[in-house]
Image (cartoon, rainbow, N blue to C red; front, side, top):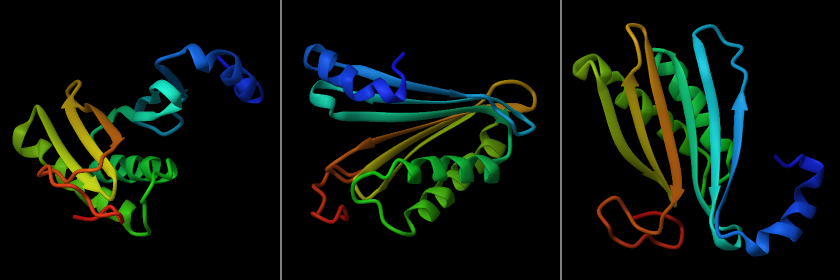
Length: 154
């Protein structure tokens, strides 16, 4: 564990020898119905960002989960993120989590906003709870595999 005021010194001393490292943030949930909340930032060689994972274990409330996850991704301030992208992520997450009603067990999906690729999994954890995980990584290709334009669009 590295304290915030020691981060720069730690990176100067250790990072040149590290091929991969993670920053893990576990929150103490304060909202009713949220049992677990954590985020994991993954980095590769040269401090290159690889992935952000946000995970909730909570009651099944698609609008609440979509709002909090979209805000979490927006707060990450990814390259190419623009005004209105959070609404696109929110709408996609709500639509995907609403699919739990039909499937009853699990839904998965992929969505791209600018240079950010999002992968969501929402699975039944108990009779009233779900585990929702959203992974964000940077990409230079569309979901169809075509190169993106310099502004992050197809």
